[in-house]
Amino acid sequence: MKQVGRVQSVQGERPASSSYFDDVFGSFLKAKVSAGGAVDRFYSIAGHVIRISFAGTALISKLTRALAHLSSEPSPFPAFTIFVWDSASTGTALPEPPRDIQKFLERREMCGVKGDRIHAAFEFAERMRLSILYREKHIAVHWVPDSTSTPFYESAAPFLAILHWWMRDHGHQLAHAAAIGTASGGILLGGKGGSGKSTTMLACLAFGLRCASDDYVLLGDSDPSLARTIYNTAKLESRHLLRALSALLPAVSNPGEMEKEKAILFLHEYYPEALIPGFPVRAVVLPRVSGGTASRLTEVSPALGIAAIAPSTMFQLRWSGPEDFRRIASVVRQVPNYVLELGTELVAIPDLIFGLLARSS
Image (cartoon, rainbow, N blue to C red):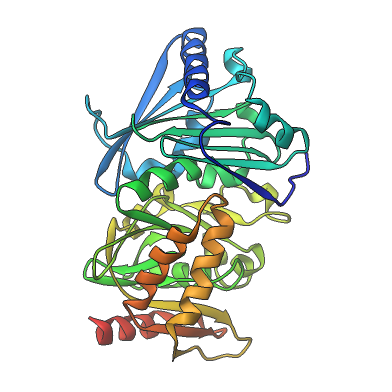
């Protein structure tokens, strides 16, 4: 199914009312019985213990690898719970969506609903998906029709919409950026896909820098802002991997799809020592592939950093809004911003980053 690149936002709660949430949650309970019970996994994300409760086992391996580095002990009182099921393995269908939603689904458009109590995202990609959050109750439901058709990007960043909504309500802004550094401080790497964020991050890991994020990072609203890890995945353009970082090929989880998709690495499985929970943000760096030999840093206006990170975040998180933009801009303005011209000699990049952190601490 072809995804239509339009988002329809509906204000108010009529389309995805609490009664529809109750219907969806009721279907999860039926799916749990059909699957022979629920399987719970617990994760500590930005200091919050979150439970993910699966109806059966079909989706566990698909939707937990990217969170494995945050696995925690079970808690009788998690801060938040996500209930997950698929129709194919449980024989339980999604309840009929409200009429206002159906007209968008019939046109294969994405439809977002935002209200005081309910956030919901209905979308068509390879398959239809539903994510729905009940804010007051700190619970959400995620549904897909068939676990076997989970797209690569959902395995790399599971529950993206739900975690974006809930974390935003609890002082953490999800941003489309990489984050590398040490416990005393680090940098945000911003830019559109293919700009060199992942290449820069991976080139630095062998020289003592550590990774909080490659693709999405949680930013706190403190001063200085704290960058916190959420997913342990790295996504790299195949041509960059083959040209400069071929030693990482054994860690690629989707080698058969590299001709058409980015290479995905689950860092927790191959390089757990490279991961770090988070650090204070000391600078924003915008990589650019220069085509030359040498790499160099040039200080630029924070406006360029905002333009590199905020719009791409809002494109990736389709139900974000002005408040998301404002929060990201506030973090970027706190620190100096640089363009990193990436030359072919990647070994010089870690020295540039270490030098930048020394000046910014």
